[in-house]
Image: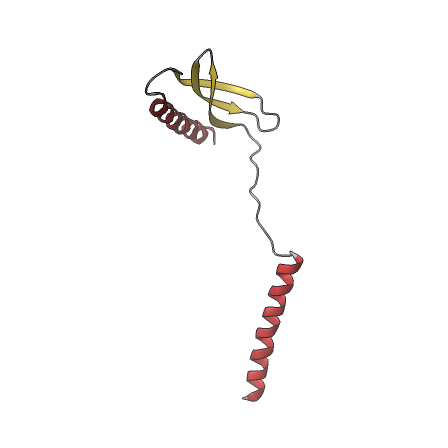
Amino acid sequence: MTLVRAMVVLGVLALIAYGTYAVISGTTKRRSPVPDAGPRWVAANYAVNEMTRIFVRRLNPGNGDVLDEHMVVEIPDSDSDFDAKFLEAMAEARARAALFESESD
């Protein structure tokens, strides 16, 4: 019985020692996201001539080149309801980007 207890205590101490070593030495495996190799659809916006354009772009991840672009809406910067329209348009652009992405896969 004493031998069994000693073995259990040694096993627990060994696990604690290994865990401490792994944390200190950084040998624990950490998963990093796998980058996609293909073009991605993203929602974007920019302002030009006192108008804000919301659109969906297909970007080449290697160099950032725009491969395709679809405008969702154009909102005058002076619009009294600009914030609400902008947020709604960005939500629509994100939804379209997700739809285009699902069709691309």
